[in-house]
Length: 439
Image 1: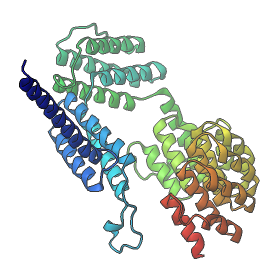
Image 2: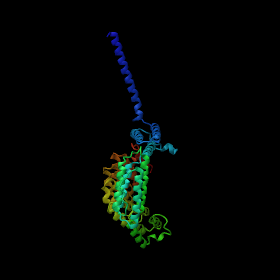
Image 3: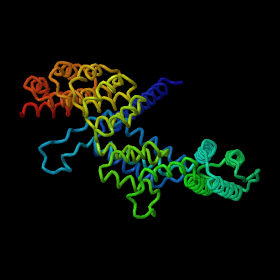
Image 4: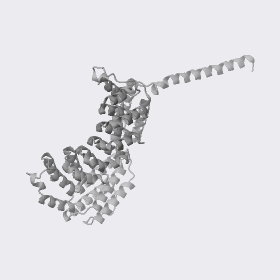
């Protein structure tokens, strides 16, 4: 090779390296827009594109792609440096927090993805198993067993028709026989190996058949239903009904008793009616009523760590309940948050120390609930621990709750402790500091 050719080859290699370097630099310049340099407008535009992709998605694989795109945007939103809302802005829409708007939109799209997924054959099998358990674990009247036999027979026939399957169907009033039929139907559904994209119509038909089965089992007469209604009849529970067209009549009567303020009748229904549906509505009624007449019954349930009962105790607001529930303040996070909220609503300073102890709990949400409970209690002994939390907690959410609590206590010392943070890194803490300074 001549010197001239060698020189040309080296120059060509150098040109290629320069081109590669320029391309890498161009890619690096583009990258920040998708990472730390994202703006509210660029993320909103990406969400527009994802929404269009979601509308067009027809398969699970396509939904997986959309979900991955959404997860990527969610991650970048967390690190994006977005402007804080302008409190002085007269236009409410302009004053909204852009991060909150984008987070809300992401959650809406996430919900949209879940709504478009499925249905899945495994969910049908799970529902069939639930029905089988209900049939096996419940005592039925003769009429109820007859209705169950009809419902299970119709369901099995429908499954065989939809799948083109053949399995043993022994329909009788014996609940063991009915459970066996449902086992056979569930096995046939599993063996069909249905795909959520390719077999959507088939799965949908099975879902409809299972829903009809569940409704029939729910309406079948249980032995306990018969006895309970007779007992309630003797107690005058149904006397408020001028008709019994509403189903179930127990619910209609419950609403009337709540309106009349008859806690005793609501408690009677809660004690006698063994159904999740009525229990939920009875507890909701007692929470709305917040009457001390229900305190003893709720404390009895609270001893079993019943969170619904503890929540109702908080609504009642009796200081007598503090000793019964305060011991659960250091339980698991779900229970602790319920207890702390209830103690805050009761507002007794007897709980101050136990609540303040949770300001150093491992769970961030427990610490936040503890701070807010102290604010509602209003005990000035909580000022120092709340001030320490505001100064040292790693979570801005917890610190904001501590600042809010200091403002709620409202003494000069409490407000001064919160007012120091007017330039805090957290907007929520700043807001509480401004409130303290404005007083």
